[in-house]
Image (cartoon, rainbow over all chains, first blue to last red; front, top):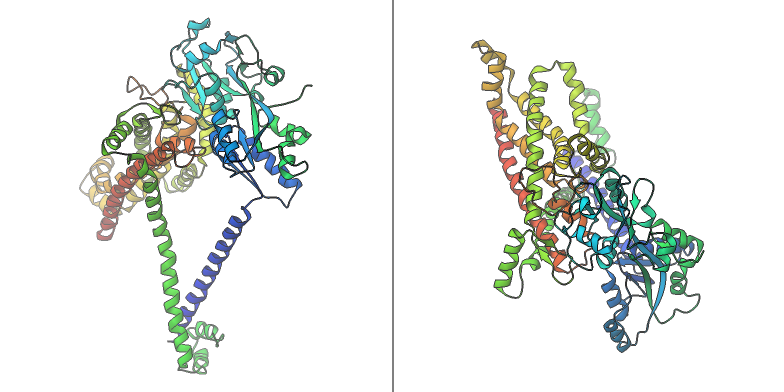
Length: 288
Length: 340
């Protein structure tokens, strides 16, 4: 009997321990959830998202007291959130539409745009490819499957391997807007899930064409001129390069100077902010 | 809990008669309080352990519930007619443009075919390789070779899949292009080769276990009747172990069909059915990789979001079915082991 009690006792202690552990885990989880109720709520574009995330991280490191949440759900969602007053800052890869502005004003919200960076997407090919320049209509035709061999556009007799970024990426969104004009890509287009992967595929495949952010263009791939304009920091920042667009943060009115919102929206002006923008493959807004 | 000296006494009491006397120094009867505490402790402990076991069962059920719950809005539209149209589009159309703003299309046929395609090709590559290796290891290899080779093969299973994927893109893809003149190296063959490599350890391990489980006496009886080694292998041992071998193949198949990272990186992700159908050099797009690629940034509550869960349900049906079949064969292995 005593032996049995002992085993039971042990089991009991064991289960108690396990219970305690579970409770601890639950508590930690609960804490975590509580910590996420933030003071700065940022929502919007998946393109601007990486900048928003990195800014938030850098900003939190400088101001340990602040809590920032960044939700990347798309420009349309960001606009809807700022119009309804559900977020402090909306990240958007396009300007606000008339209808969104009107709705905002009805809600007593006055959206103000802050341009924080320029986004340019470079179309790249294998360095051995003699094609140096394409029109954006030609690129669109390639991705729609209408042009399938390089010899149709002044290159060697080589089938074209069209490589796209995955449809959930901001780079894809930019490309779809500015080059594809929202037309559907052909079924033979391959998809890769990151800029480095796109770079790796194009640099190892002679017939490949792909697109990446400016930061990922190097000697192993060649960036094409589009409509006669070569991508570079200055052509993208000035908007001469056809596949470039400004990235916005929208706030309700111009934020109070020195407030966290104001500091966040002007973070792109700091050295750290510019480093982040460049590291994420975008072009900082400078005139040097 | 009032008697912390209980446990040391009991543990030594078993050993020597001298200390057995010590045991009698304790009260033979527990007080009602202690008795009750012990009883409650055992009941509560049992209940808690039962609950903890339930958590894992519950987790599986909840996964099923949530995936199906999120998939249902995809197929239940305003009217029965549109719902049926959506289902038939999902299963028969080849156009997968779920993210398109004006005209989204949800034809998952190419994706279902892509998954089946890479899995089947991977099995065609992996099964002969794995089963023959298992036969070698169980019946032909000397003991020392087997002791070295088996852990090395099992090490293959420990390599993270993203490492395989990286290998596929950086090494295998250019190699396929340069050696065989494929236009693209990220294709069905590349993915299938890597998947085969990943399924082989599972197949070898399980098949070898089931071959070894066939007793020595069966082999000796066969030799005793004058059968050669080949005849013994082909006509006695393999037929006897066939359930285990089939189970190993199904487990390898599940490994291949559920793998995400490798196919995401190596298969090329083009939403197309290869034409002609046997052309392995074309890109395909498996279910798992599609979900992984598109789930991250898809806004919740959109048809696109629900369509990914519908794909998840399809995948669950596949793996659940395979799991059932492998359970069936594995249980037959166990019965045989018991009777032998």
